[in-house]
Image (cartoon, rainbow over the protein chains, first blue to last red):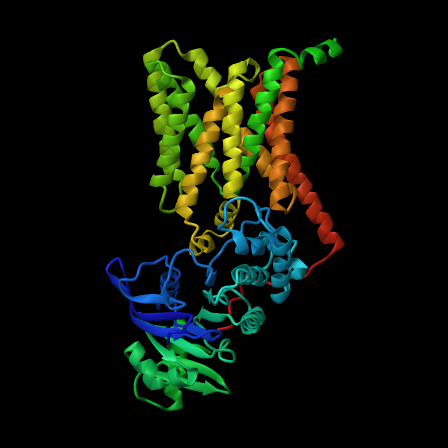
Length: 277
Length: 289
């Protein structure tokens, strides 16, 4: 796996005496779309912070493009989970996209025409031309999401990390963002690692899945991972996987009782984060 | 009589007043722009006011006031930056301000010949700037503007999206310390001229107004400088004509500019909405789970 854009090898992270991540192993090949699935508190954000170099690893290592990662890298684009753009900030969408290109550089922009062209191209790629001149703090959540994706992609990274980009979007915006990420990244040959607690929006586009539970991970294609035996081992208790017309329900099981009535009850009483309708 | 006053207004000591206040306004407009964007307004209040302790202490031991002012400003900035490293700054900033004011009060009472100088530090001596104050002010002012120009983009990204900045190698803590350092430098150079209270209002009023007037960051910063110049120069002119203190006109002028900009923004938004009705989808329904 030398050509992998990202390889995570035996990663362990311990924060304040708590083992948040334990023995995480997976790799992402160039251009691959990988979903990082797990309920709230499973360690998704910690894993992202470790990949970004913001959270030191206790065990194992993380390689970006086959080399240990450095803080100052243009190989990884990042769309954070929670962001609050101040509506008083005098900054247009196109300004924020432009900052993705050269925010780290000191002094004045060197090639302004080239920069303007790249910004226009990126705005078109994410379909943000219509609101590129509005200040970012006044845009809707979905529009801000598009601007942030353009910001993350403009420097030409090989890997895009998107932390729960669908969390605060309505269903239609979420589908649009997923389709956009899949298309833009395929066109540009960028690998994507996207985290979500809901699996179904991502099922049509995911090449591979990394399923995170209790700080441990199972990786592979969705057929290999979304199985009762694999997920039960991960959760440490019995889990049912129910297929409803191509949509998947992962249900924290109450036992071996397989009859329909039992399933209904479990669905109703399962924790919200562990039910994926 | 008006013509006579108009001529005198641009002669003698008044020339220094126009020039120095112009430099101060440019620095206030540029540094204040990021002060307001980053929400560091309280630090911009605490650092100049706290630096008064340094000036008072300098008077006591007999070194230059500006030197004392500069040292205190940097100590204050460093304290706020280091102690406020985790999370919000406000409690640390407040304690730093109170501690430095208390120290300053002690120095004043130990020195006991200091009262006119204290008044000058609070309200400045725009109309009493000497020729040899001009050059240091200009050089320090250029350093401040150059520092902000160099840090412009990292500062902008880390002000807008600190987490994204961190992920790209722009450490939020380092950039905050660098910015507080520039704020301290701006304080040290401007306080002897316009005083702690006026630099505070000049750094906040004009930039806060400018961000309401345009969506473009570069234009907003330029407007911030222009508005600061308008406020400070019209304050000097008004003070010359009326004999009322400059500080009164700077303080009320800054507030007036801010209110006017907010009204203009509100009017513009109402007009835009009527012209282009835009149905916005309801947000925050959550993914249908």
